[in-house]
Image 1 (tube, one colour):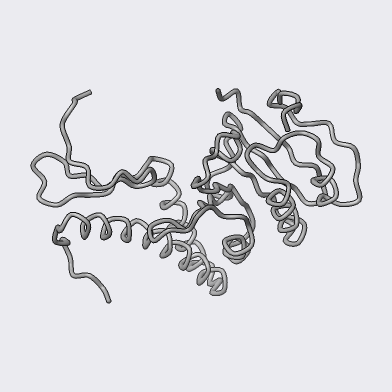
Image 2 (image 1 turned 135 degrees about the vertical axis):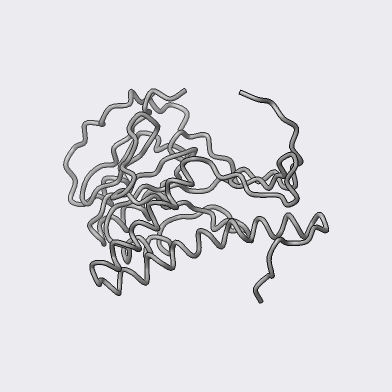
Length: 92
Length: 133
C-alpha cells in the first residue's frame, strides 16, 4: 500500500470530494458498496429494457438518476464552496 | 429500553400474531436504532406490498446518530422499490443526500454477516447482529 497526501474538499461520509496528486480536478470517493449498488441499478435498467417492462424501467431509471444526481450534487457543492471550476458545463 | 436482553444474532422465536404490524407493536426487544413508530411504518409497507425489507447499517447496529441515513435491502420490482423511497422512514434529507440508501435485494442479497433487521409480511421482525461489534 502506498500512502499519499490528498486534498479534501468535502468531508461528507458518503462521498467525500478529494483531489488526488497530479490531477487537475477533484473527484468523488465512492465506497465499494455504493459502487456495487450503482452497477446493480444499471444492470436492472438493462434487464428491464430487454424485457420491455416499461413501467418498471421508468422507476428503475429514475432511481438510478436520483442516486447519481446525489453524487453530482455533492461534487458541485464542494467545488462551489472552494471556488473551483467544474470540469464540465453545469446543467441548469 | 435499558432492560432489553442482548441479541444473539439469531432469529427471535416469535409468538403468532394476527399481523406483522401487531407483532411490531408488541415487540419487547430493541430493534436497533429504530423507534417503534419507524418499525411500524416499515412493517406496514411490508404488509401492504408483500415484500421483505431489511434495515442494515447503523440503524440496524443501534449506533445511528441523528443525521444517519436509513439503509435498506429490499426486494420486489422497481416500482415497489420506488414506492419505498416515499413510504419508508428516512434520515435527514440534504442537498447531497436523500437520507436513505436502497439496495436491490435481487442484485445484492442481504449480508447476514452484518447487523440487520428483516421485516416480512405478517411476521415478527428478525434481528441479526451478524457478529459485528
